[in-house]
Structure formats: C-alpha cells, structure tokens
Length: 366
Picture 1: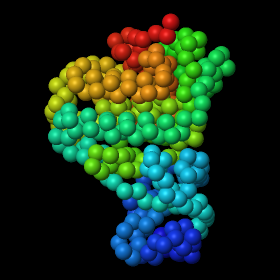
Picture 2: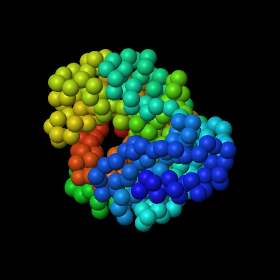
Picture 3: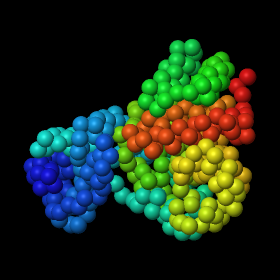
Picture 4: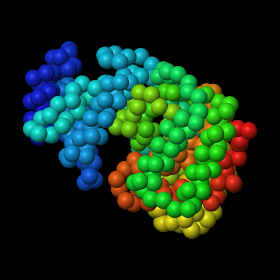
C-alpha cells in the first residue's frame, strides 16, 4: 500500500508540492486496531526531509474520520504559504482512493509533540515549564479563535435547543441516561436560559481535540496543530478551552508508575486519588478531580487559563456552568471505545455530585 501511495504522489508531485525534491522512502508513524483506525505514513524526500503525511483509512468508519479532517482543513486553512495561526494548520494536499482505500495527504509540520516533554519525569513538577506549556497553547488558541471568528450568536430558546439539547440528545442516545444525568442537564438548561438573557456568544473555528499530543512545539511556541477530524469552521469555542487543561491534568502520574498517586510537584493530588475513586475505576478520575476541584499552583493555573480565555472571547464566567458539563458529554461521544465512553460518563456523574465545590459552577449570569 505504501508503494501505491508513493506512486500516486510521485505522479502529482510537481503540482502538489512544486519545487520540492522528489520522494524517496517512507515509514509508518502510527497504526491502531480501533473501529475508526487509520494508518499514518510519513514520506521523505531525497534530501531526507519529511515531504508528506498520508492518513489511510482501514475501514468504512475510519473513512468518515479521514474525510472529516480533510474537509475541516479545507474550510479552515487557506492554500499555500500562510502566516499567523492558520499557518500552523497542516496544508491539505489530496483526498483520493488508492487501491480501494481512502487516503488523505497533507503537508508535514515542524515541531515535536508537547506530550513528549510532558511525559519526561520532572517536567510537570516544574511550575515554570507547565506555565510555559499553557502559555504556548493558550497563545495559539487565542490567535486561532481571533483569526476564525465570524459572528456572535444570542442563545435564545432556539439556541438553547441547538447548542445544549443537541449535545444532550446525542449523549443520551449513544452513552445512556439516568435520573442523575437528567437532573444535571435540567440545571444546565436553566443556567443556559440565564446566560441567554445577557450574553451573545462567539462563533469561531474549532479544533475539537485540543490536547498536548496534537500540539507540535519548539522553543516554547506552537509550530503545528494536527488531527483535525473533529474540527469545524464555525462553532462554539468552549470545548477547546477546556480540553487542554483536562488532558494535561489526566496524566500527571503517568511518568511515576508505582508511586501510589504521589506526583512530584503536586502534593494535593494524592487526596484526589482517594476522593474520586468512589466514582469509578477510570485512571483519569483523580487527575480530573485535582485539575478542576483541587488546590495548589496547578489548579490555580488552570483557572487562570480558562478565565483569560473567556475574557478574550468576551464571555462571563457563568458560561462555565453551561459549557463545561456539555464539554464532558460531548467528549463521551468522541470515540467508540467503551472504556473511554464509560470513563467520561463517570466524570460527568462525579461533576454532578461535586459541582457545588468547583468554581466552574459557582458564577451565575443572574
């Protein structure tokens, strides 16, 4: 299959990447066995530099993801050389069927995934390094949202149904439902009605999976943002604001296996190892609780990150009580993996029980 893609690219190379050296070899950069699995292949040119990245769908479900990423990038990124935040998106080059498989080809991006440094022992224990990660992510996201901002919408009764009810209906259909969830989203709808009376909401481009593994960095700057299959040219921007700190808090303990919840630099996190286990056995529960309900320099940094993002968007803190639970519900439907879905459901039910003790729920639009 790699040879077939290389042949396809070679025939069109002068048009796809004019002036670039010819293609040489390739390596498989990623593969998995999920129902929506894709194979990612990096092609190199004769100078030894990355020349193209091909994502190959392995099944029909994966084709939808491949096509969605292509369509999102075509809608968001202008062709050719681009400055600013939009220049940090991969340039889509081709979407074609090769030997029966749908293949999406994009230009390579510079940088190293932020997750590489994150998982190095000592990195997340250093407030300066963590603050630098948040600064880089927040700076790019702010510039991207500003570059793609198209309008503001008033969340009237119809908007509540569209932006709140749509997420909730999908969650109920795909994940499940209980009186507890009904109670939470009834409260969320009430908060949304309060917000609708006072606040028009921004509409911007959306990445949809804005976590550190999708941010390519170098020198404290985001050089590329990859994996746009959940991207939108126009949507509400809150999920991207919450996703980065949520994912950052999930894995703080992963560089310290066998430490029984002790994480250097985060002494308060161990309290959440005990507290949040009553909501399930998902490994990410303690990190979630520490990030959004905890004390210490890291939860304070997370709050500043969100406060500053909402201020730049012109939205009051009351929006958190509406869009954070909706973010959790949306994330639960993001993957088909049963463990992932059950994990996010446990986060949502934990948030329901504990919400009065987090700043996310305390502000009111009234």
